[in-house]
Amino acid sequence: MSKPELKSVVLAVLLAGAGPALLSTPLYADAIREKVSVSPEKTISPSEEAVISSAGVKVLRHIAQARAGIHKKDAEAAQTELGQADKLLDIIHQALPTTSVKDRIWVAKKHLEYENTEEVLPDLIPIYSSLDELTDIMPVKAARQHLDQARARLKAGDKAKAKKALEETDAALQYTEIDLPLGTTRRLVAQAEADLRNNKFDDADKSLKSAEDAVVFISVGIQQPLFSAKAALYQGVVAMDAGNDDLAKADFQNAIDFLRAAKQSGDDTTREAAGQLLQEAQPLMADLESGTTVSAGFHRLLERVQAYTDRSVEYLTTGWERYRAEGHPFKSDLIEAKLHLTNARIDLFTGQETDMARKELGKADKLLGQAAKAAGGDAATGDYQQKIEKLRGSVDTLSARPDSGGPSLYTALEQQLDDMISVL
Image (cartoon, rainbow, N blue to C red; front, top):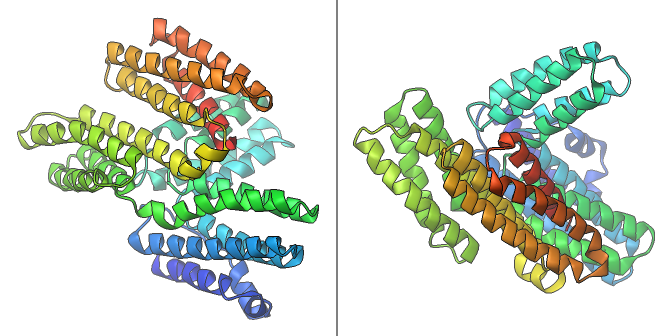
């Protein structure tokens, strides 16, 4: 993000927190409505993190004030506060590096509803360009493969499969740690607004209580060392692939330092993940220093870090201690099952280690069995039991022959688990 663009975001954040009286004037209202375009030239910088964190804190304040209004049965005051929260959530969304390309994918899918497939093909050109711009800051290989499939389906005149491939392209771009908690927060705030319109004060308060956990993560979690380690590791892999070993060594050392910091975390999940990742990272670094070829090892480690950061986001945005007391008891099993399924994919297709993949699939199968049993004990979650059992059947098939489905099958199963986790 350039300095002028960053200033626009800062201005919008400050104005959005200024209160309804100030926002009512045309000048400040125009500033809030100003489209903040983000050119994804690099990963989120410390300055941008500060902006997002500041916006998150202000969202938290407005949600707290909305809950105060709810407890007073003052729906109008609560709605006003949630309106302010919506503006700030829009600002956070615009600050993400993936926003531009996701918007273009949305346009292409919309055009598919009323245009011939060949007329939609030009929509893919700016999407490819956006992916090129993101190459230096995030993995885009999977997204590009799905986009290639979309292009092939468009050329073949198959609208349904082209739309599915575009949706998979979009899903592959869930990169930043903000994506999931931001989506969760927006959904919960929208639900609270709908409940308020129907005078369902208790339901609205419950939604906002859950939203607060996701907002806390937006304002604090993005600066956690585990996620900083992932960013440094990715930069190191890019440098190594470009032949710049000296720069790669510096980035990898930064990643190891961040992992050491994460190992001191007070959160058990983060501490455990950092410890396991360090066990892989430190020998690779020693091999790199000795001149051994370690490119495949670092690529595998990057995928592993991504899997662990995904798990951390899923736990942190749930407000885990609160969730364990009030939510679905099998969500933890689904989160852990997804981690082992992802690890199986990494072991098989990146590490070429079939036996390790089979062990990870066995762990995923056991956790899915526990989740299905827990879901069956509650009439309200019976539908989940059927979905989980179906997933478990696919995992059983893979356990017998891990390479029978290819990486796309693993990714599809991970996405199904993602969908369940995100709505529980």
